[in-house]
Image 1 (cartoon, rainbow, N blue to C red):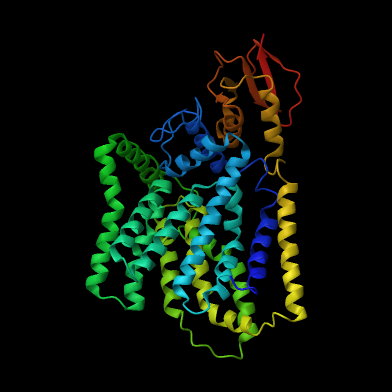
Image 2: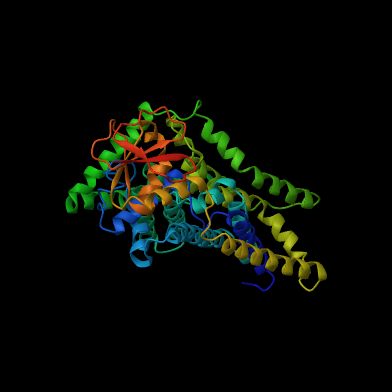
Length: 468
């Protein structure tokens, strides 16, 4: 790395650390990520197995909602580092570190001259996207899938230069791993060669067809091997497809319009658009060759290939397309790379302004690290709920079941925190039968069975009862 470049990287990572500092090493996370962390911890402790994942005794005793690879990889970290909450957060952070490295490697394949000078640009566009820095501390499956989709793109780019079929096979295997991490949303890199053929027109139709077939076959081959070697794996995958994929398309509706995901994409990219406008404003008097325009369209269309299929279903969430944001970041960075390179050549690295920027970037990075450490082991989300879970667990033994009122069936994070921290299951069947303890909401209209009495325990949102 050239001497005058490192302040740009420090600024990028410093800004990111400041943004995520309240959450990256603190307790609490989004419900989905909490479930995945709990399942991973259980798998590491021998509760459930890779093809039959397990959340708790009463809520997803067999978890087929998603393929198992991301949780399986996460479980390896629990095996090595123990059950600490830091394992959840550091695993999630590591997925971003790896993806960031891949983004830079892709950039260096696209920008031949002075790629080091601007390799920080796609990283900056990536980390200022709100959904991206939101997902870092929340342990989404898309975080792991993003590694494999980005890696497949890098391998396909490498296949254009040498060792063609080796890299295509590696790309296909990466796409298979993306599928095994989050399902069909990870298959969109299969379109990459098509967009290169259509936009760049530097490969023949014969090569496009052969390379695509090799890529598809390399993606399917591991599934074929699994079918013969581990037949139960196919049963697990088919159960996922029937319940989660087909069921979601037919029965589940979380948005009012199929265009939700496109609207959300545009809103997430607003910080990137504003930065582009600023750079264009600073260089509008200059003319540029737009030599990267074809690669811009290829990466833009590749990113949209991962977004538009989501519109098939009315079950949509913004983070479903998280793996496309590295590609959009690269695309928009390519659009203004020449302008940024022009501005950087004008920088006087010996001047006072650059020195101020250099020391400011160091300060930003140090502040980011300091804030992360300051907020470590605090409760960054669901503070009252986590406090209540720990308070109840002081009386209720781990690996037991407590009764709850039926309304708590949708208190998803409560299930998750009890399972993650103490492997306590919640039974919402009425009336309670074998459970020694009963938990209800404050101001609840639930009729307490006569054999239960209040436990004098100060909780934020709940009341605990015990059989006498």
